[in-house]
Image (cartoon, rainbow, N blue to C red):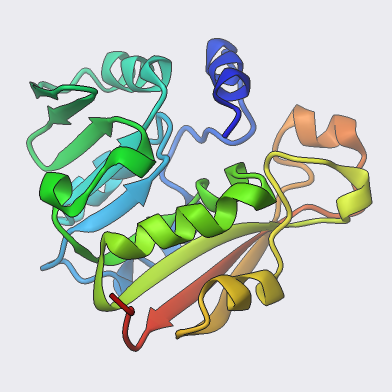
Length: 219
């Protein structure tokens, strides 16, 4: 992962991948989440999704490696928290959700437990191809059997933008999740959502939501 790239991004006030409200897919498909189970939010940035989820009685655990993003989330949210430190990891425990400042690849089940549901809105698309299999392999180590992932990907002409966010096809998802069933649930166009996207003059830029259901995750 290009840590310097993302650090530079979080130094800028306006980012096309940061939203001032919960992600539209999360709002639209909230009914697919089990309120009795906690939800994993990998590479969460300064997303306010945890606040939205807490208001809807869903406890979430976020993981983000960039301290600037988490500092910004704390300042903007104005919510009280308890800070716990574990060597190279920190956990900000809010009333109804947790936010970890840590390298995702260093987080283990002993830290956060295992999850039956995930909302990946910006993790996989942030990673170059050579890191995606490693990311998915580690993500699976944090999941219970028969877990469900709501995966947000980006669909555009690859020769028009190099990423990140990177283009992810359904075929690639099938390769990454051979033990699962994959269904496209929705897609929305982002072409007119931010000045940055307009400047790129892309033919298309869609966010696509997939539901990935596991029958079993090999140990």
